[in-house]
Image (cartoon, rainbow, N blue to C red; front, side, top):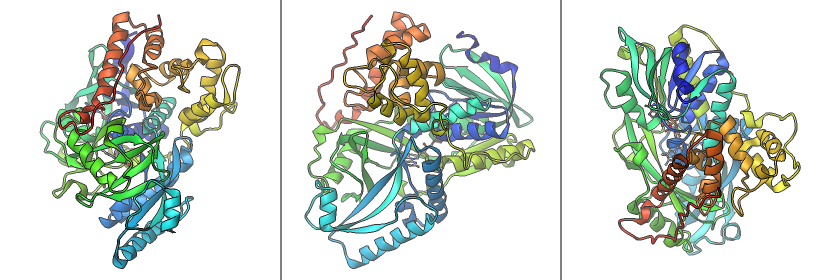
Amino acid sequence: MAMERLSWTTREAFDVLVVGGGIIGAGIARDAALRGLKVALFEARDFGGGTTSGSTRLAHGGLRYLEMLDFGLVRMDLREREALLRNAPHLVKPLRFLVPIYDRSLFYRVKLSLGMWLYDVLSYDKSLPGRRFLTREEVLKAEPHLETQGLQGAATYYDAQIALPERLCLENVIEAREAGAMCANYAEVTGALATNGRVHGLRVRDGLNGEEFEVAGRAVVNASGPWFDSVAGRLSPSTEARVRTTKGIHLACPRVTNDALVLFSPDDRRLFFAIPWLGYTWLGTTDTDFKDDPRSANADADDAAYLMRSVREFLPSLRPEEVRFSNAGVRALVLEEGSASSVSRQHLVVDEARSGRPGLVSVIGGKLTGYRAIAEEATDAVCRSLGVAMKCQTAGRVLPGAREAQAAPEPKGPVSQATVDHLVSLYGSRASDVIRLAASSQALAEALAPGTPDIAAQVIFSVRTEQCLKVSDFLLRRTRLGFGPDQGRLALPRVATLMAAELGWSGDERDAECAAYVARIEDTQAFRRNGQQIPATKTDFSLAFAR
Ligand SMILES: Cc1cc2nc3c(=O)[nH]c(=O)nc-3n(C[C@H](O)[C@H](O)[C@H](O)COP(=O)(O)OP(=O)(O)OC[C@H]3O[C@@H](n4cnc5c(N)ncnc54)[C@H](O)[C@@H]3O)c2cc1C
């Protein structure tokens, strides 16, 4: 099976080949496949494992971008936020934001009111509640952990949260596949096939067996996010840098907030958030130039110290030693001078025919929130390049987990209501398929570890239907187990054993998978090294297997 995993694609002729399976590449594959194009997508690692999983996880217009006068960007994202709430309600939830006001002048309060008014105006078609102002007493009732000294009140507004953008990305892949696309993870694009400048295919390396092959396609889209410049260099003989890459980090702290807080760092007045996320207060983010391979980005001691110093002015009960883990993502911004946080978040879709590379379309920058609209614009460019007129189908279309199920997910046999609720929060209406699997065998209905709501059937379901090929795919991107207090360590042996049986791994392969996962989550503790401002928590990396 290994040799035929991808090499069959050499015998096909695709209309469009997509490089990169982050939210934008997955969105393009879905859009193009639903229009009727023959699509193949190649992702070097796992779907959604790049910047998509390093984001703050908000579907927002971004109050901050109003200050930068990016009205077009804010309006597009507010429209797309609304579409996300409608089309993926199991993954995208409304979230209230508070902007606490401390010792501020009348001028500041008027400026804030104006900004909030404009945010409301630009989202005139929203379903979410509008802005409000809270008195000091109301704020303290809502957020008892907030610093009281100097607090005057707060402004509130609503945006939305995508707690698991990894799964949003995956649902785009799933629908692309249903519409006939071939979507491969662990398949790295190493070069382009071109004749007289025109791109007509890609060279791809299978990351699982090392096999290299060539795939024919009439158009190619570079949707590789922060890897854009390095991928562009593989697709064209000479290219200049077009992307500025900046790192942003987050820290998962014990939960001390009920709403999302918009705060300004006393260090440099930068805006950052303290957000309720999966039982934590999720702090972020930072914005610093980052030139290395985005894969190597981690939160370091300086990043963590900056965020902790900043937040303790507002939430003094948060203690650095109680930070559970971190994550980091690398933004791809359209190359511009100036401080990292002042660079526009606008995206660019470029038909490279004008730079002498017909058949190649580039997507540079863009936010998670606007991914569907960006995918539409990129697919429009592909259609123009192919000389076909095919209308976008995605604007009002629900994602697979938001479809009405034939049978609504409900408790069955050994599957309890609590498990059903958890499964629905991950899979939406597709949870019915997991429940059916679990009801077929007592062993598959069992929890993957004591105290976790996740069950064995999810592993089988993910391997068989969600292209889950590695233990880290399952723990970090098919479920939220890797974000639990133990970062998935307790479930690791059972997950690896079940995957080994499904995928035919040897004992050594299974152990290597576990070691790779442990190394991955140790990276999320990198901020404790060097400066040592934040002492390490005690970790137990026991890999005891139930054979
Ligand atoms: C700290 C931070 C916070 C953010 N917060 C938000 C937010 O709250 N809301 C919001 O809307 N946006 C946010 N963003 C922006 C958002 O995360 C990104 O715009 C979005 O995830 C970009 O998706 P992408 O598909 O372009 O990139 P990626 O998700 O990085 O996908 C690119 C993919 O290309 C693959 N690839 C690379 N090279 C190759 C190759 N040779 N062959 C095949 N595949 C390859 C990579 O493995 C990767 O998976 C944030 C970004 C950061 C960094």
